[in-house]
Structure formats: C-alpha cells, structure tokens
Length: 113
Length: 117
Image 1 (spheres, rainbow over the protein chains, first blue to last red):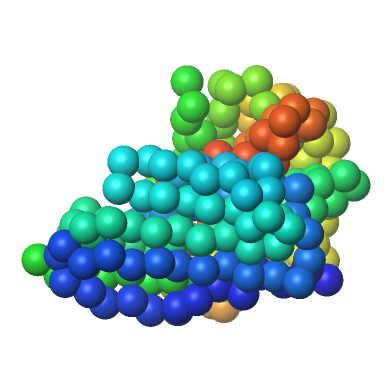
Image 2 (cartoon, rainbow over the protein chains, first blue to last red):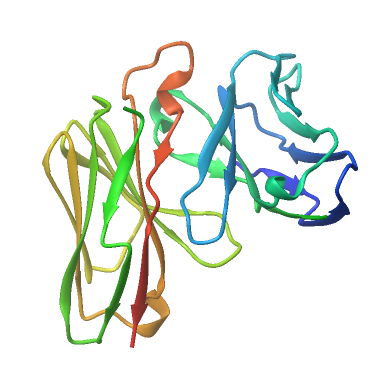
C-alpha cells in the first residue's frame, strides 16, 4: 500500500509570509499532482509533475518533484488571503494502478490579512 | 472546456428515500470517478469507470449504485442511506491512456453536498 505523508497538517500565517508544504513517501510515483480546495467546492488541479527533479512555477507557487520521485514540495511566496484553502498532494503509481490516486492527508492553510 | 459539472449542488434526503447524483464532462475523458469526502479530509475513492465499464469498486456498500450511461455521463444512485453517509460527493474525470504521465490528471467537479437525516 502506498502512503503519502503530507505536512504540516495545519498552517496559519500572516499575509506576506512564505511557506512550504511537503509530501513524502517511501514509494515511487509516476506522477504527482497538487490540488487546492476551497470549502464546499471540489479540488482544483494546480500542477502535475512527472519527471524527477522537475520544478514548476505558477505565479507565487513553486512545485518540486524529488529526484527519486518519492517526494514533492509546494512553496508559496508572499502568501495572500486568497491562498487560503485545503492543499492536497496526490500521487499515481501508474501502470495497472491507473485511476487510483494516493492522497496526502491535506494541509489546511489560513492566511490572515 | 475543462469543466466537470455535478447536480444537484445540495441534497437532503431521508433514510428511506431514493435519489441520484449526476455528473457530466465534455473533455473526451474515458475514465470517470466517484469520491466521498468528509470535512477537512482527502477524497476517498468509491468507483472508477473506464470506457463506460466499472473497473474499480472500493468495497462500497450496495446502497450506493453507480451507472455510466455514456462516455460523458456518470450517475450515482442512492437508496436507504445512513446518516454517516452525509458527505461531499465528488465526481472526477481523466484521460485513460498514458501520455507523458498526464493520464492520471483528474479533474474534479464542484461536488454534491449530501445530508442524510
């Protein structure tokens, strides 16, 4: 059974601060996705990383996939109240496991004005 | 069009009722999913359809009955639910074929907030 350990579980910061969320596993993933979810809404896909060592940027968000494809991080620079939400990492083992994403437990981020 | 739509947005039902949740996508995806999500927790996979055939059932109780009438539509029929089934029910879709790893990018709908009284 693949597991993704996501940390921290809760993050409460002031506007303008930087933060990093981590997802770690002992298993290799063929791809890893990051989602953001607001209360009462579905998760919105932010990014997919597929290559070990890959770094992707989305405005103030920087996503990194570990060289061994076992871990990933999300870094937010100068957080804003609009960044508030539940952040989820989700990995896919690929192959015959298609369709079954392994989700981290989520990080609830609150950015105070 | 990268949208997955779900209806209704909210549903309140008694334990003896029969109701259905609906999901639609027009992205040409051939894999569709039902998830259940409790507050502040990650989604839990319930069912996966691939090319309109049920390919994964995660040991879901029979009071939940999925149906895939065609490649764009996915239904979840509900009958004799329990209060603990109250949750956000999410539909998602993705490509089925592997293409640069993007096969596993799942796009989620807004969900149906279900309350069982």
